Image (cartoon, rainbow, N blue to C red):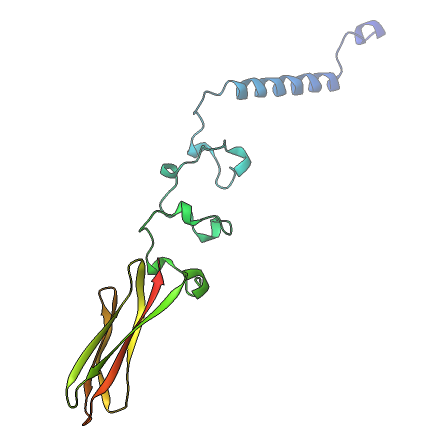
Length: 181
């Protein structure tokens, strides 16, 4: 081969670089030509979609499975009372020791006392006022010879019933612990 013929022939490095440029441009062109909504779950490997890959507002409630989001996926203080529907939580939804007395609000004790005649039974009820909710209660006799028969919630108050086993009149007191709503 003469020197003149050799200068017109491309080197192997030039051929490889041209092929690489061709493949790079073709791949970009193919990616640019992907139709909208043409990538489905089957084409995405598990764990490869990150938060930065999602458009704001693209993941809505109907798109999330019922058990897909648990406590581990929620940031601390992410769920506020404004985000919880009224009447949607029950006691089972509240973790033990997660609510302290100071978070409940003002608790007021309402007391009512009555007299029980000698050797008879009697009852007394302490009721919460409007705007208050009964949370607990109880009762107390004036002496040990008076025995409790019943101590339970009654409406929005507390009922205390007792039997006076003494020969003299005695008193019993019912108390209701009321939470201001």
